[in-house]
Length: 188
Image (cartoon, rainbow, N blue to C red; front, side, top):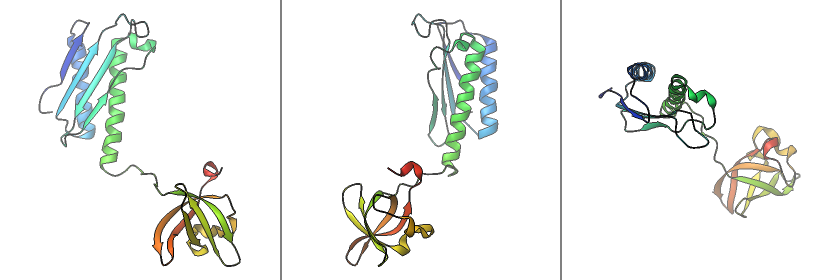
């Protein structure tokens, strides 16, 4: 790290053992995920608030070399284990490790991105001629051919079947170049 971790004790006496534990956690994060440019940890002592009275709060902000940050905010409310400062610090760094891991995975493109294709409902079907019409969620009608239905599922289509589709402009208007049946969770 370019600068040592900044530790702010609020409502509690500064402790060298806590400083060392935080330094060890930060070193572990750097060893596992690469260089951090800055780290700020705020330790708040037990306060008078009725839900968190007697519990420590640990906030962590990690700065990455590319300008991105990882923030771990408030500790979970009403978790009695946070009455122990060591537990609160360890738990906050566990959450920071997880968030940093998720951020690194996203940056490396290892996280799946959900398909953002539009959803439509089959409104007409001509099985003899091998085509159908679906209605998009914005109310437009879109033509599709049986060859555009993936996995040979044209025969499983019926009026009211919900599908996702990729739209393109055809000779006579919008048409679906790819049609996929939604699973059970998408059927209504």
